[in-house]
Image (cartoon, rainbow, N blue to C red; front, side):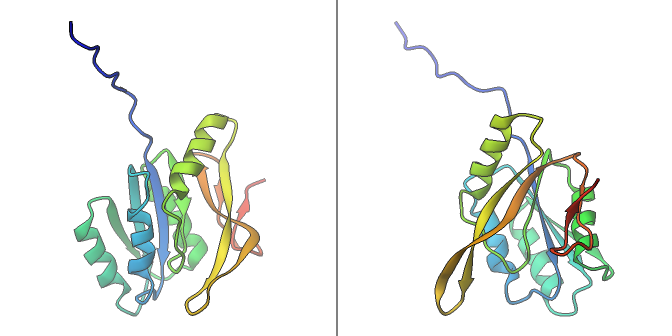
Length: 172
């Protein structure tokens, strides 16, 4: 008698788009993108949206895209970070969208944990936030910040980055 076959799932993991606005980020971009490509959750679409950089950022972004098929580079004339995030969100093909600044890093399990909570809560929930750590290059972790950042947003919700005090606001 043969042992029963392991069950296989026919449900594919949802695609998560990571939108990274890029502006003159040559010194930080590779580390930022590496923190995304090192995520334990692997079904990612990584959008590097260059906002008219005048340094080596476009070339670095292109090189990163050539190394990982999940990365796509979008170039635009300088429009500011809010428009750049919006343009990235509009270009995304994913069911979920996460935003990451070009000089920030993610914990390797960030997307996995946040997406799990968002899916568990169901379609009535539109986004999940997490606290962030403030890190200085020389000193390491300085403090756990009470500011909630690093949202994973369900695509199709009415959220837009605008010119609010922290650069974003939900639509009324």
